[in-house]
Length: 79
Length: 165
Image (cartoon, rainbow over all chains, first blue to last red):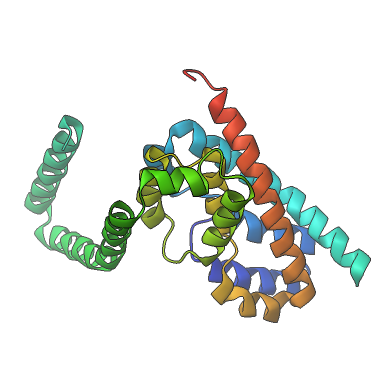
């Protein structure tokens, strides 16, 4: 959910992985960084509706964990 | 301009005036920072206005309803996914356009799908591949696309069945 360019999340994620952080955690970080918009929430709520912005971001947050688990599980199956 | 925004502007000007009386140098530094920020935002604002201009000129409500409306079917989902992946620039530049398309009949689910797929950044994929490998990148991009569809469906259901609907 951190603010910043997605490029930063890739670099940060890569470095965290090298330091021994689990791939699931790193993937969840990447996905939530690029999909959850906590900083732009007020603008999104103003333009597209408060309810839309709130539930879209909540779903993105929840899905980031699911996607992380599924991605790593699928990767382990294939590799 | 709404009454609230005029009051907010007036309050900000008063605060700057008080800050200038307390510490002129610091206030001038703050103003300089604000000016630089405004210059950085100008290209983004230009992009927003250009997108809205193009939208009003070429994208008519009939086209919106046919291609990204409630009855657009598979075509609408594909346009939202591909559009999100290909879109560039900061996300807040797209909010105004999406709001405009929404008033012309764009489906709520497809707006959510578009915003979610903005997370798949094509120019940055080589960097992701460098750090995590091509298999991981492909798997992650696939799951993100699939979950974007799910998020669209769920968000639309929640918004539709919310209070006042």
